[in-house]
Length: 143
Image 1 (tube, rainbow, N blue to C red):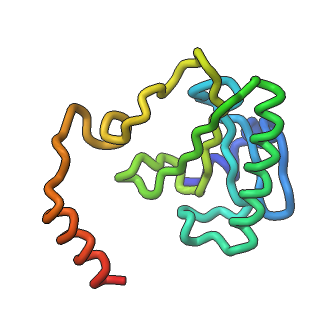
Image 2 (image 1 turned 30 degrees about the horizontal axis):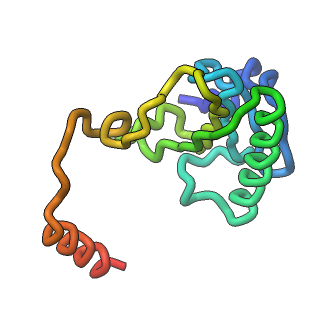
């Protein structure tokens, strides 16, 4: 299946800003007005495949979009996110950073507890300190 970011003309028409290595465009299913996606021009699936230059190009656009969104939408906060892999919700295999300008009273995700909007609904008790230390030890062994 071909990449929609690379092949659908309407997406190119939604571009708001670009540089040599990345571009920013409005998503067709915004969570809030001004919900922008920033993607490398090169069609790659994950953040880990980005070159240092592409990472910097994306961040340059992020900062410019942030400033413009503060003026345009009176944004006083931002959500930044990307999904890495289908199991994590990535539906387009072209890396893209979501930039959502936020302000008091807007809609969309308003509950910022990760267990509620990412992976584990409902309450959960704190993990025992011993369990946390064991997991930290396992990760350190694989660094």
